[in-house]
Image 1 (cartoon, rainbow, N blue to C red):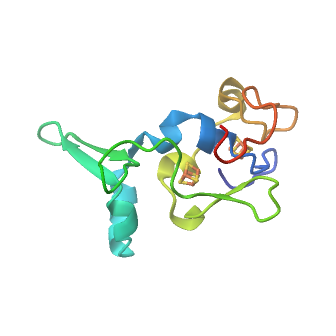
Image 2: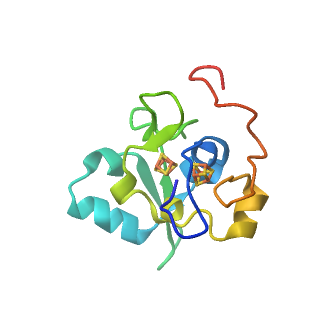
Image 3: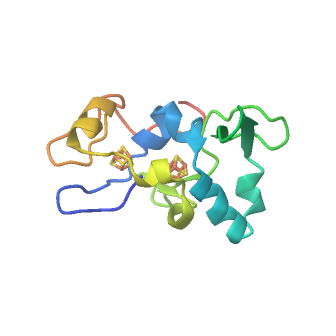
Length: 134
Ligand code: SF4
Ligand code: SF4
């Protein structure tokens, strides 16, 4: 989920967080890790694994189950709104760069099912997914 600009308004539908695996089983950046280290967010860091692929080539994969090391099937920071009308990001102020930057532009939104640009419609959800049924 992302911030607003003049043509984009995130409706909090949760489509990107729930349906796009890159959102919750992708890579986070060096800057993300540095931000979380600076803030002492060991809970976030515990859900990231760094793969050393050679000199200057490291990948930080997220999010993992800190107990098992397995990939999660839903972002652990995604919260249901109290009114059950959508979702909120529980780490919105410090969320990964790739979450901040989504969608990159209208065409990206259209191609991936984000309804945030006026006129776009979600392509992959008919109704709000229910916890435990999706
Ligand atoms: S899919 Fe688009 S409108 Fe829906 S939560 Fe994500 S950014 Fe917001
Ligand atoms: S960190 Fe926040 S914005 Fe990113 S996938 Fe999770 S709930 Fe969505």
